[in-house]
Image 1 (cartoon, rainbow, N blue to C red):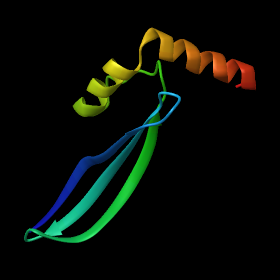
Image 2: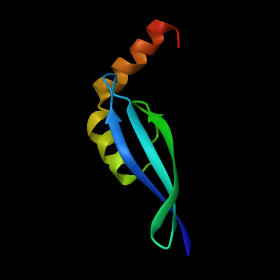
Image 3: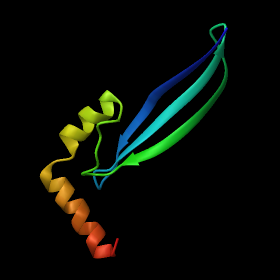
Length: 81
């Protein structure tokens, strides 16, 4: 029997408050992993996290304070982003 399993397996917070999220997709046959791949994405301060994994939402709720969001936006404005 084949099954596809997706799991957030790595969450990192970087200096500017962005959260890097790695998702692993594994294909298992009879309980034995036969294939896997990874996908990464970044959640920036102030981004909507409602569709994110519950762990990512919890980290964002504690890390993405008003001050962190303002500093991130100011840094981007200074770069012209």
